[in-house]
Length: 361
Image 1 (cartoon, helix red, strand yellow):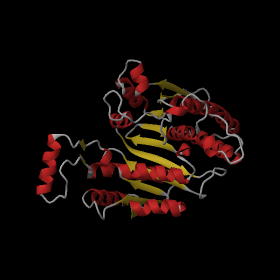
Image 2 (cartoon, helix red, strand yellow):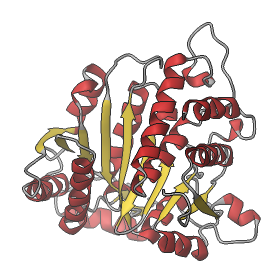
Image 3 (tube, rainbow, N blue to C red):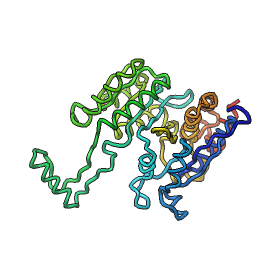
Image 4 (cartoon, rainbow, N blue to C red):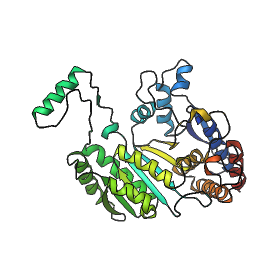
């Protein structure tokens, strides 16, 4: 940003648990880059309820839409105030239909492999996380069970059902955005992850539709693989993975698996993307037992803030943050407990944040 220009506007959602500690750390790092952002702070979930608000206030959704960009701390996923998940509710309200998680190794971080840098990209509006759950105790569920059994389904009496919707329209827009993001990030290969050999209707549709969209991206080599094979490869030869594009539940699992392979999800930033709006957040959860204790790793949230800066066009500031994080992790003298080498004493959130700021120059 040129000195004297107007600051950017972005929404800050601290979240709960360790979220407020980590978003505060990320804001400190962004400020230290010299990029000016006016943060519009909003609560969701339990903190919103404690203030007498809805768990997902409309004013929060409206603010993110107006700014077009937000930084979000982790929010508890358990049902709050009648909401099945505030995280899912926020994504749906904002039309965020693609999630990206970048899993990469850093020198100095204990991990079984080196040289990993994979993007796990998933469509987030459908699949088994679509919210179509039919409890076993409801009469309508058992009527559906009997209807399906009459048509050849092998279902037991008293079965509960979760419906897996997959549509061409949702897959098409997600594939287009995912491949555009991969191309802009300089990626050269994308793998469509599925289980179409078993779920021919749903995963088969996802695979066919994504292949059709891939034809518009000749600069990216697109192949496909079964989800179980991809999971095995991530623990045997993860360096071979570049971009994994997949359905909602597979993506959730594979992102955590890839995060574990690179040293922990405390290092994994994330982006939720839609048309004209983006919300950035770490991959990990709220870890309430660590809240307020100045001990949690801020890297995933700080790197999420770097993704936000890149989204705003501040690529230089984003690269400076990434280099600073890499330098601190490689040195290993001021790192939190989750990435601390044996024989060294871990530091807290604030000290690690300050170490990263010290490396920005």
